[in-house]
Image (cartoon, rainbow, N blue to C red; front, side):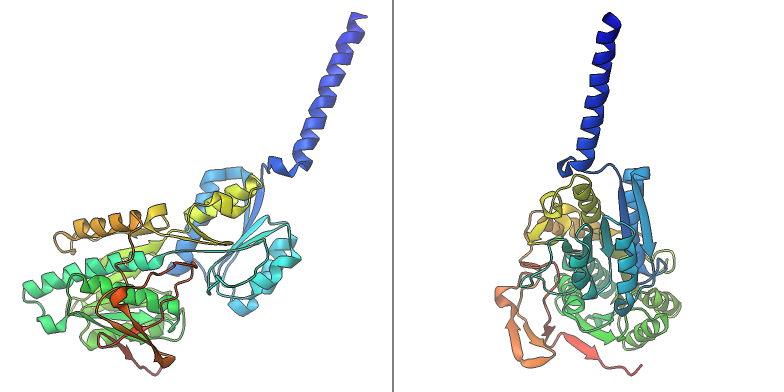
Length: 400
């Protein structure tokens, strides 16, 4: 009788264990123990933009180990990404991250309701109706650009005080891909950072009309250097501008300010500082949300606009790396840190402010008076400032 009782108890324990095990599997509120994650890159890791984005994949592997299976596709052009996205979704990816600019992602999302699609923002999503499983995100890059400009301004101020250049030669150059608001917002914030230190500094901008062309980017930087620019920065995807600065430094010192990836290895004599968007905070938190079966926007910390999120220094979404103390002007670190502290305290209204008039390059009748200020990323993670500052920014027209 005692043996029967014991056997009955053991049977009940086994049944309960199976029941709760099955309940955990079928009960969506319990989350998942493993995930399949997809990454789709518009380029490969040899380019700064994709390399910087891929650091989030490395962070996931370090954080979760065998609990995640990561599938990735590289060199996927925007108009060719439907097939790889479908393949990843069909293979059972719970969440897919994409760093390209394409409307196909939001169109595909409804077909795969069990997959979360997370795309780096490429347009203003504030007035868009999107599927529940489609999300956009981006670090508030203008903050890093402005701080980079402070470092550049400190260097120019030193060059002027030491007689290396006269005051009227405080010229910075910028190699830009396209005249999108994202690019314009970035180089404007950079120049305003410079001018917070050197009020008379001006900028020359050269568009390459391509995101990734080493030859075009290097050529554009060389032309800017020839035109007298003493510091070059960029919003393009190759190391071409950094190499141009390094080669020019043999004859005349030209400094380079990076974006996305440090250029100290390829341009050790000219690299000054780099700002980068940190994709890790969003991607790690988004994966955590899917693991826990929670809406992504309830777990990710940032400025939430529906299913779109942005953040800056205050949440670690933007950071400065590799300040070259061998070439940086004295006091640069302190000046940068003081401004970063303002961003951390959510004081960001000072960036796009001053005695400036901005002109929309696509409609000269559309102007903006910056005397009262402009707040970037207020309603969307995608930068919307798209005005060229009159008298201080010159667009250099180049035939490629």
